[in-house]
Image 1 (cartoon, rainbow, N blue to C red):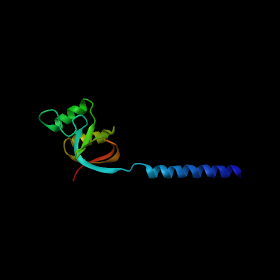
Image 2 (cartoon, rainbow, N blue to C red):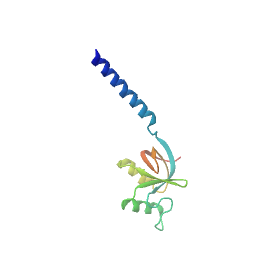
Image 3 (tube, helix red, strand yellow):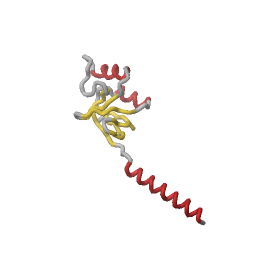
Image 4 (cartoon, rainbow, N blue to C red):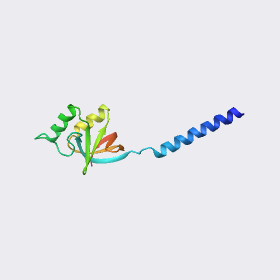
Length: 114
């Protein structure tokens, strides 16, 4: 009987820890802004088409970014479909759903802004 009580206590402690962890976990938010790249941010350095500059920077290793007002968020994703959506929306308004951690957003989804 004592072994059963110990197992029950351990289970309840683990359950309580899981509930507390979920309560403090970051929640997904929506961010709407212009798709850019982390190297250029709000102002593209190459003359001409900003979308071409963005794509060139990403090909050279820069991450995609989202410019929201004066803030530039680096977008963290390795998902091929998400990367394709970001490429398609280069220099356009988009809504990113994800979890922010400082200046970085872990991307859950990308849609054109309405």
